[in-house]
Structure formats: structure tokens, C-alpha cells
Length: 298
Image (cartoon, rainbow, N blue to C red; front, side, top):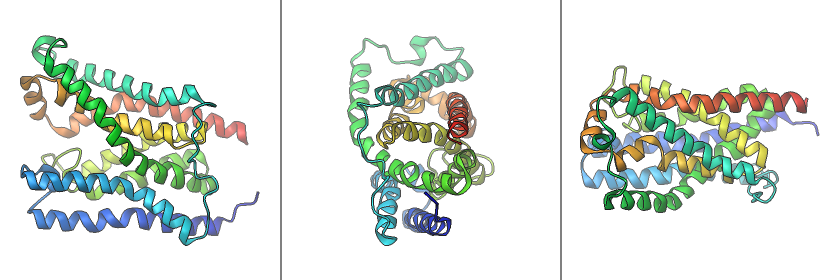
């Protein structure tokens, strides 16, 4: 079927404007009202605002998808909302397993690079302690809550933006361009201290650059999951694990006070680059598989 590229461009522009506008408008307003970057505030009331803002912000790509389809009368054909676990159980399992492996590798790297002079008992809460089990249960339960905002992002970026970009510029370029767009969408949050804080050189521009790199690598894996399963749910599961069971989150829950204190004293960008190592491997392999799949389709 012949592609109407002008219509695709129109829909893509409308989607991007709708996805970007809420964060670009609300983040500066909240920072001004709260007296500074909201994600580094210690004020309990501001932290409550942060939680609500973050959850609602992650839903904006899905809302933009929905509104764009309605505004342009596109309909919901090819919306990736079908549950295809029966056809692709391996990919559904991989969506969670790959991210958990990334987390394990990242924890090992953080420990080896920054905490190597500490014993395991000094660096982590003991597995047999009640604190350990309570933390694990809490994080697993919270994953169910995190899934919905994760779905909000995935139905927008992988369920709408990526197919449109692929139509226009091909899959390899779409992965890179789409990752950069996704990274720039985070810019209002990065400028508000999200992910990297504010205490690093060239704030916030270096943080925005690192986020674009991270999102490009993540985009390859999440696009691969969505393409191979024709469903947005595996990418949503992967996003959920990435946000709620990442190495940094696990360290906060299961690291000792001394270990957490030491990590907090290290440049946040440097820690993020270490965490990027496992993601880079997954992203590179995913990109290769996507390119190979694209060549076969041609």
C-alpha cells in the first residue's frame, strides 16, 4: 500500500506537539512555584507534587496518540493494543528477563567500580533480614502501579511515533531519530533535576545529552519488542522493570547506608554512564536485529 507521506508527517508533527507541550509548559511553572528544580527538593509537599507530575507526565504520550488519531481521523488500526502473548511468549519473557539481567550486571559494575573496597556484607543489606524481604516485596508490588505510566509512554513512543518515523526515514534512522526525540521530551524533567540531579558540570545540557543517548539505546530494544510481538505490552513490561527495578532503585532499597552515602557523593553523570554499559549492549544487539529484519523485509 502506497504511503501518504504528507499525511504521515502531519500526524507525526501533531503527535509530537501534543506529547511535548504538557511537560514544556508545566515543568517551568512548577519549578517557579516550588522555588527551584522540583526533583531535588527535600520538601515533602514538593515531593508529593513530583510523584503526581511524574506519573501524569508519563501518560501524556498515550494521550497524544489518542488525540492525534481522533483529530486526524486515523482510527485505531495498527494501534498495537492486542495481547499477543500466546503467539510470542518468548519475547514477552525476554521483555522482563533482559531488563533484570541488565540490573544485575549494573549492580555488579557499580559495586566493582565504586565500592570494591567494601565487603558484600558492608555494601548490602543481608538477604536473611526482614528489611531485605520487605524491600523486595514492596518493589515487586509497586511494579504493578508503575506499569500504567510505563504503558502511557510506550503506547505513544513505540505505538505511534516509531511506526510513523519508520514509514518516513526507514528503520535504522528511525531508531536513532526517535531515541533523540524521546530524550528531548525528557529535557524539561532533566532541567528540573530528574535522573541526574543538578550538581554536575554543564547542567542541564550534559544531562540532556546523556538522556538522549540512553533513550536511543533503550529505543532499539523497546522497538524490537514492539515490532516482533505487534503489541505494546512487552515494551511496557520492559519499561516498568527499567523504572522500578533498575540498579539505582535496587541499591536505594538494598544497599547499606554507607554504600548509598558513598554513591551519593559520586558525580551522577559518571554513575549514569556506568549504568549505560549494560543498556548499550542490549541496545546494540537490538539495533543489529532490527537492521537485519529490515533488510529481509526489503
